[in-house]
Image (cartoon, rainbow, N blue to C red; front, side, top):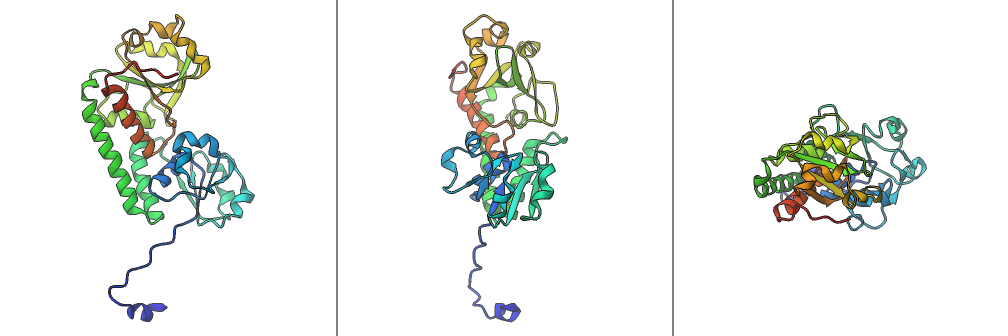
Length: 288
């Protein structure tokens, strides 16, 4: 139409809504963020495993499974007429050159040596909103997350006197300990709850022995469920776990499964689950 044609449009004519971009997403934290701002991708890797991140009901029908996240089906990607491919620059960095001939690639990361995943998740949410013409929706997601943090902070104000361990049980001797560099650490800080782990790394967690928890005897322990069968004997047999002060004194709280490398929606869910599980007066609730 050109400038002349544009000038002849009626002054009240609304601009057409931007076309929804066709995206493939290779990282769960990016996928859950796009779903939360109303721009579901057309393709994702490992759909069944990813259900624990976004839930089967959150995905529209027809989303294509790309196979393994670390080795997506290139031939399938080439057939999807994509506008953008969004990938984690740390997890999929090696494959980015193979993706660039298919569609423009957006590389992003929130788990970095800066050790500020929550702040990075907010920033990347807004960047995705700009890229996908959903800035308002992205701003709304950030605002909703911040409101959830505020509500949880108020609900949990009486729990700030003790430090918190956040763990995932592996077996009767070992666990995953979330530390500085994890989203869960940042959410604890956001809620005014002191983290107990003194460790920091840019992956956000380490595998260690249960005895590590004895180093902070006054701590509370948050652990994710479901507990694997290799660890369930901890609850039924005498063990180092049963001798931890937190276990003896009823300072152990299970919460539902959350993705270890989640984005802003996971951060909000973590805050919500902490408030529900601790502030409802049932810190020893256990579902195995």
